Length: 442
Image (cartoon, rainbow, N blue to C red; front, side, top):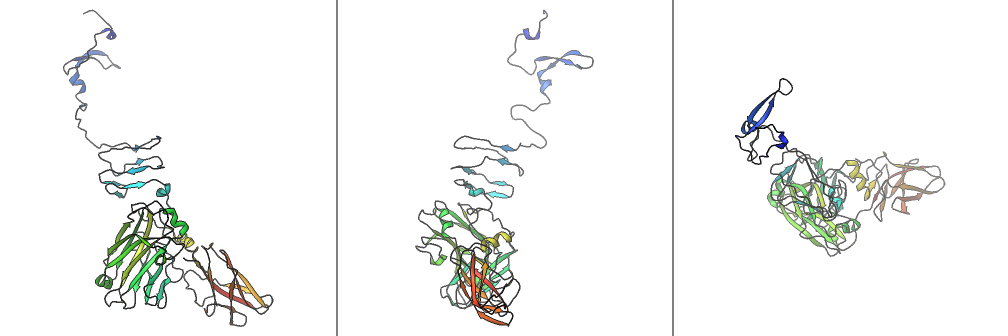
């Protein structure tokens, strides 16, 4: 065979395992040209067809980048390890992130078959947005009025933003702050108790302002919460009815909504142990809806009045048909939100009407006409009701003449969203003091 360059040799397009290949052995030492079969050359490698791997197989982090107009992303992975990360570009417009028919668990988030996130608005992905949590004080951290509200003559606000009412206003009922640490992420819960042995409906509710309610038009809403019942509640009537209610009036309480309608009404069977419940409106909120609220109700049955109560915490109302995980807010953040509707000069732990000097307003009279000013910590929602209390006796509509140890009648005037005036007949150079509350609830 005549000598020829490798590039001049005839090309072999189909290689068999017995074919020979020229190999230079020990090229960096004493090079010798030898021969090797194709099968010997590939013996240590996995076959191309149906390869078998040993050791740990690790998938790289999956990242999808797509700037197309419709943002369609398709990802198929047969096995996704627990620490795998899928990164998507920001969803906008009418995008949908759809998990197909397969059970997935991604970093402590369990997604059921067919779950999807609606990306019509970026509010789904904002921690502190109205659409993420529309309920104020849903974890029952804030109790400015008192930690136990006993209602014997009228319905009333209890925990901040939460209203309790019975079919007959004078029916004896109590709402109190209780330990809620049995539910991870909660410190307190609300206990709603029927005290009177009267078989009538009790409702515990919160209404959104109209200017916030209309922002949910065109969207479904999902309510989620944890609840349990007292022994008598469970034995006598274990059903707690949860509702998302809509209306067409302006800034009314839930049971007073104009053209009230149930977006969803669900019967929940309570036990003495904590359970999580969810319910979703059957349809999107209509374009003429101006009021949205949530309510929890039961009808007292039997004769029990000791443990005839339900307890509730982590109440959340969010846009969409998926109950998103509850995200507790700080106490300071919840308190600021509540003070738009109610605040007081008393220490946080002191109930209004208590004889207490800490935190009081003090004023020295100049002349015989007394007028001093109250400045609110938070801008109020609307028309505000202001009450003053003697800091020594706790008597309402009185200021204290500290110099003469006497209460004096007081009148409130010039009430605005941020301030109010306190007026009374004064004695020149005498010292006057008082506490106050400002309420601007629905």
